[in-house]
Image: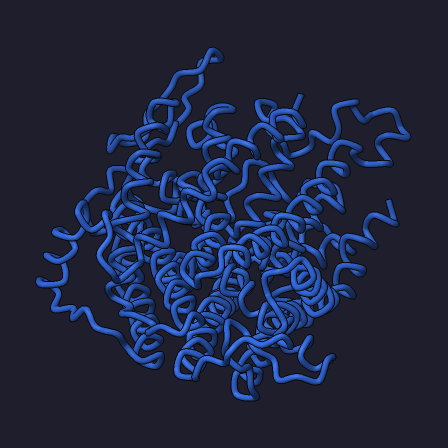
Length: 555
């Protein structure tokens, strides 16, 4: 029955993809649209109060604006985390965060990663949850969505636009309306929304139990639609207050996929080539289906050793999974949350089968299977340019993309960007394995222990935030190292692609001829898929062999 429910869920999600994509394209259109009637007046008031001038920026000024907003939000939220013990809305009297943990948490939520080295309900006050965390959950995905829209405009030969206008529209036209409606639905489904402190319950055995609660529904709504991840509670979306039933589980999956899957259609409309947008969506969808089917097969078959001992139930591996979700919805959620780079979890990834755990890891290493709001599609566009460049080399023609020549300047930036992602993951993992400060945190030595460390840094570099959770990562070493990886993993690729888009926007349009390589055909889709597999997947292949594959072979 799980497979049937997954198929139905995907069909329901598929119905909303194209309309959402068209809405996104119209929402960020600088020409007058019907959407301006609803949001234009409020937004103009914001621009007037803040002094924002609605004029195009150069790529350098756009990138600088993006960077400064992110740096300033890190500083402000760091102060809130450090001072939460003396600030209001702290009925449970939670002390201020330790400096390295506050540093890690501020960068984590700024980077749309939401990696948590603290337990949600006991690490933050209500003020920190609402004023700092939820604030970043809106601003962080909004900066990425604004950036991808600027990049698309640049590739289409238009001006990049204005960062602050795009940031405002991301919040007012996209995240606030969706999060508000989703929050009300979550409350109706049983998710708490209160400022009351922890309640004391008396159990049937006569013991007292402290039950945490708080403004969970508001947190949960933007957590999922903004591809933020993280959890109000330490157990994340495996907690019954954060994910009470099958309907809340489906709504979370739908919210995670809504915007990332719609971006290819928004792109197609904005560049004037909807067929190309459909090709990009198809490539990402094919990769998603492969990952999902592999994960489901592995989890339903379970651990081969337990199967030989007669201990494995027919329903598959239930280790680390909630009974109310079962194997199918747990595996489905693990693939969606890493394909959409959200990081929320409704099962403990550390307990997945070796291949079931490898799939989320591969999703984050590729970082192109839909990806987070904006950031994942930016990587897809980067691979599009790589595919065009390789095709041009094979036929001896100067590569062109959307009527603009791809030359050495653009390829140097993209080549450097390609190196940063594996360097952050593999370089940081090597340092962690080399020093006892990192290796002593492994809870399961051997091949699985290697995967624990690689997963932590992959999750950080890919702005995902989910963890194997078997790693003792609440230490200064892990707080600082993952904080650095998260910052560069977030900012470098976005700024690099803004630079590429700015370069292409300034070039003259090359007339299309009979020899022009079309990028809206199934042939280009195949080349794009091959480029992602060859350039992206093979980079990490040795690591996967030494980790989950070796673990599987030794069971």
